[in-house]
Image (tube, rainbow over all chains, first blue to last red; front, side):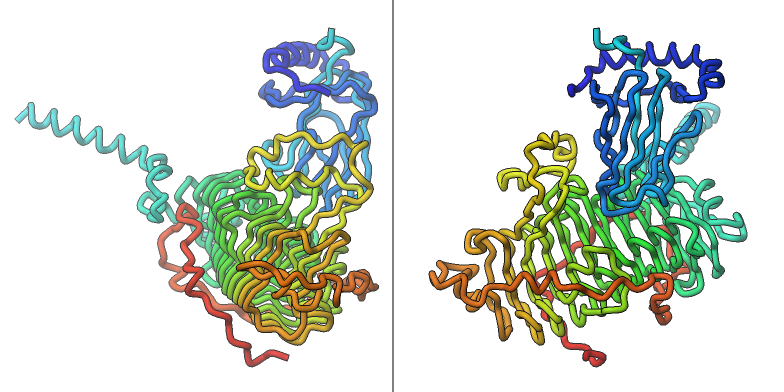
Length: 147
Length: 461
């Protein structure tokens, strides 16, 4: 695990954005919903993770790591290790995420991101789509940012 | 004269331009407590907008949203700075979640929002909730039958919660968490029939809990540490002049930690550097004041070294956690460096003052002095660990606190949806006419030294 630099992020963003921009048809065909964010932004502190599956912990009330980059095809696993109930809701794109009833303390949810893109998500109890308990999954084509 | 008129026009234009920018200028000038009231508009609900949310969405920083009596079945989200959201009658302006909506009013990232003089009930999560803000105030608020916290400030600094009442929350009536320094005050509240009267995980640093009543909860005041939130450990909460009694309430709603803490008045669980002074504490099945560890299973991190105690939360949030392989199955958050002075403690089943851990308690740096009490565990605790001078060197194992008593099975949680409905509560003075007062002047100064041990109330058991 390592912290990506801003410049690397910029390249990833461009790459991801390009892929996503070209991926509208892929979304409808593939059904996995890779989309760039509406403003094309990626948070500064993105942690690049090479492991599959990749773990994200839901604490009270934050996702850790909050912003990650993984390769396409990676399974991301969220575990609620807080004492409060949370949910994981996508901001844009196709359906993925988990509602409160299925994400009580101790619960686990996973989703595999097959398409490159920027996937923003949040807990609607403890955040809005852009503040509070939020997170981002930056999905890149395999090897694109790691060569 | 043309020249004079042109000059006047220029000056007038300049003045108008400044006035037009006045809202933003207030951001910098309102720290003295004058707020943005001079430029504020009043938005009436339901006269101007049918719902509180619509009024909030239409508001500009500095505005007052004034709500007439009624039941408002909505979950309000606030993201605009420096609003004052006020009910004209605390007992008749009611936000009702119908046990389906999550939060009554949630303020996310908006600085200086004040919420005044209203009631929230029947929400599945929180009544009034600030998260990620700088500057907040809750005054004359009532919450009951709330699924998690009644009044809740998370990852927020510079706050004041005052003149408020909370009941029927399984976690805590009032909660301030994940902040250091918090720079916040809880003053003159009543918290009853909750899991915990007060809970504060990983909060502290100029955080005052004063002049308030915590009764008929499972446990009273419970600052606590754990890695399930960031910015651990809890530290430097000042608890002075509170009435804390009869926190053994077997039918109140309660989450697991509230069950674990049941029967204790003031219980810093893994708390560090807290000041507990001049409180009146009585009628508890276990301890009046208990300094106990919190054993955290499946923790996310290890206990940071004491040398990190001064690290601000803003920095701690960016710290990497320990390699999971190095985190023990149970992480022990010990109570250390707490100061327990001048309290009046009576009628405790196990000990008026208790200090316990799974490790030697003599090395934890807590001190005890000038308390009125009849029992401690270990015995002669004030002699063993005085706040001034050297300890007696006596036997720390004599009368040691029996931790197994805390692990005994407790009555299961009651249903928060059927917890007691409170009587009407005191209204905010002049609620109809008082100007907007955004939370730019918080926290207020509290003369801690002037606070005395409160009298025992007439309704005491």
